[in-house]
Image (cartoon, rainbow, N blue to C red; front, side, top):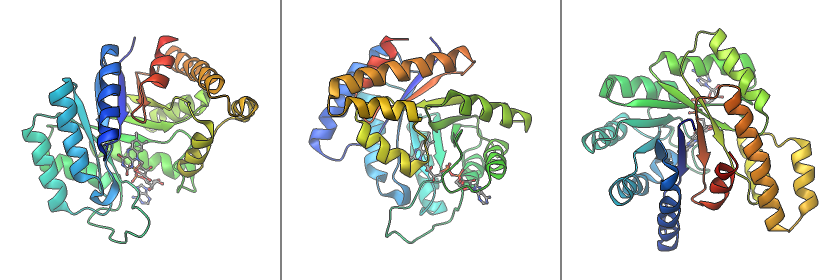
Length: 273
Ligand code: FAD
């Protein structure tokens, strides 16, 4: 099995904390290379993210990569956070631009993730292994696919060691993206982000926002199962496991699962691999 990693979001309530503990316990035996914890742009989850990172490391003995999104933040704030993570011994960071929550107007000191990558290298040298985001189906705000590819390359040129993709259900989009950026001279591992399917209505809403396409045949099959949650989960696991198999057979260097802090759907996919 190639390296796998799991993504969590920082819980804010006691119930969510208990849920994350259950999930971390259930997924740990699958021996992830690391787990990552998301970060709300503009620092909206700043304390939750660092608490969650510490908790997963101390209580569950997991290697943790904090996400760091720069939009809305200042150089001083981000430098302080980098110093905290460095002194706590973390070695990997997922560096992002982020999307400001609606109503939050402060753009901060950085406009794009490439500037954050540059800043991390200036401030912390080679201490951190930096992952950045990649979009095989294009970033939703990009209106020129080739320019978007060049913006991705700029993050690698600035010092990123690897990338994790937005989720997708079309393996060809991933393979094409990897080929295209390799042709531009990019040579870092690009790990597919995998979104297991449990609730189709939620997935459809979410996908509209982040620009991930749900192929018509998957949408139609899911709709046919309607409210039958068990059938949706079972079909979802089969479809996503098939996608993972194709990606791995085609040379994907690992898999990064968007767990949404739930273990079952990710486990169901991995059981089939
Ligand atoms: P960028 O790489 O900066 O790209 C954003 C857009 O700007 C693209 O359209 C790009 O083409 C364009 N662009 C880049 N450079 C330039 C330039 N110099 N001039 C003009 N245009 C440019 N969001 C969070 O808030 N918190 C998280 O924890 C988080 N985790 C994520 C994890 C993964 C694996 C992924 C794939 C996404 C994650 N996101 C997260 C979402 C991400 O922040 C959004 O997709 C955001 O809109 C873009 O972030 P980015 O780092 O890809 O930005």
